[in-house]
Image 1 (cartoon, helix red, strand yellow):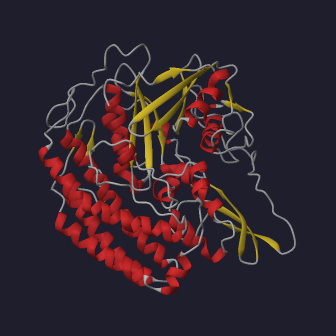
Image 2 (cartoon, rainbow, N blue to C red; image 1 turned 45 degrees about the vertical axis):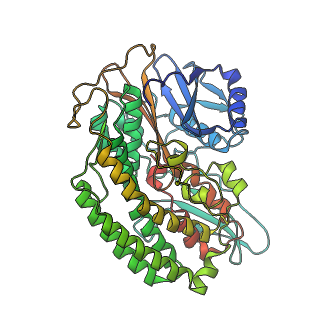
Image 3 (cartoon, rainbow, N blue to C red; image 1 turned 180 degrees about the vertical axis):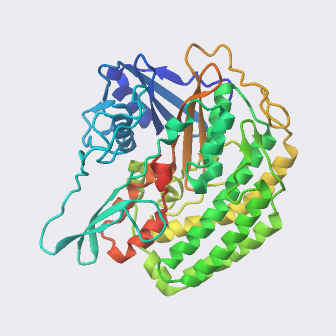
Length: 510
């Protein structure tokens, strides 16, 4: 990715933003992220767009500090509207004409007028009385009642509040309220060297340690003009597939468990433990931390392909047993349907999108490793729990089948990166690229993590330290799809539907 990081970046006047974005969307570009920046003398908003294969565009809008107003793009793109609400909460940048300009990230006790990503934000002030109660829509009529769930749950999960409007057992409307534990994660990256930032990236969302780390280092490498060797890229791809395996096998069991088919859950947990112990042998950590660096990727031991093949065979047997059960199949089929058009309009990613027939997969759309003509994203057409289960099952088999190829590429692709890195993987200097203009060194990392495509956009100062990291986990795009899919679903199927989506709270609420 080196050498072309500024060619796709264009300054746009606020008045021309809507037309420019509309043109990109018509031409098949996808809005991947929107990053706000406080440059001291004004604000800067960066819109990053992606298109297969490997194409990128960025639009940059500059705003004065005294009147940070943007025309809302919510009418063009649902994800754009959510990014705008995030900008409003964190930077105080107002989206003019937004149809729903209420708080998104900030809960009701955050003081009005305090925007934590501004340079002059200062320490967090005392919490205020509830100044921004969430305006849930109340559905009224004969036989309609509400069921509140959360934000404190009986299980050990992160907080989320779900409010159901129901008639009998049928869900008329469900609204999810998240962002109860905003950690200021993006601000924590500022001032760190890329090497120091890795341990933070590994903790953005614990079950996606590899995905977020690879996205971060890809972005840094693009910013610094570092091109990694094929072997390094292949090793990272191996780790990404190992991460996909242990998460998918857990979901296959837990989805079955939510319809009372506990035997599948017991066996998938056993297999997940096998894979976690295998992970610990490969990188020294059960969640595969420590295997990825800037310009590097390391293994303590090579993956045990025989063990992976053995687990894959057992998973196939468990899946067949599960789907052969008439009660399980009945509960899965037609439950929580997300039609393809709605999945596309909401901007869904990963297995949620592919279960609704969308062929979105960064391994094919923005490849770092050549997987050959035989690699095709796994899709289903039903958009229901069964489809999301089946996509996971097929992806598990596909990942297990990819690992021998990737391991071979890792062995023959050469050692070390091309750039300011030593062969041992330790950085000798954070040299900044020359001749790239007066702006900060910037890069974008795009990775197909196990939940879907995630992005990191970074900027580095002259000293090589991070000045801004913008993170977009696929959960940011996928959470809004859950309430849509739940329309006309019965309340007892909510745990099943929710698990079939299995979105990250931490990855969403940074």
